[in-house]
Amino acid sequence: MIGKLNHVAIAVPDLEEAAALYRQTLGAQVSETLLQPEHGVKVVFIELPNTKIELLHPLGEKSPIAGFLEKNPTGGIHHVCYEVADIHAAAAKMKLDGKKVLGDIKIGAHGKPVIFLHPKDFNGTLVELEQA
Ligand code: CO
Image (tube, helix red, strand yellow):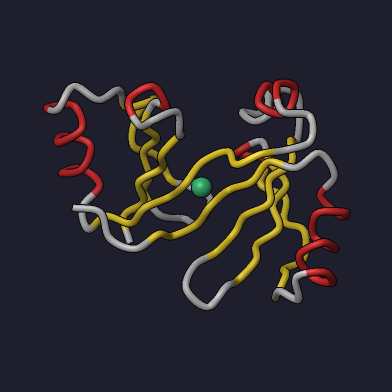
């Protein structure tokens, strides 16, 4: 069912520092900082030949990644995102298999429909499925 790895999202305590690390030390193509208030994050996109890395930093009062950074003050992998052909079919399959879907299908950071799956069902990893 799952297709390509769309991105790996890494929560970081200092977005400028993390962007510089990828740009200068790793020599990656790094975007400007983008504000996504509807998702409660500031994001830097890093384009790799085969996937993307998203550096996430909290934005606003109730950012979904604030708690994660409290528990992981130096940053850490927040979620991985796999592509699926049909988000409704994917959500139905998860529920059928007894996997916890967090919230409803919503429009994700790339303007495409996504769902999130609880880490307890996926080896401690928050999984995002995105309709490609
Ligand atoms: Co994501």
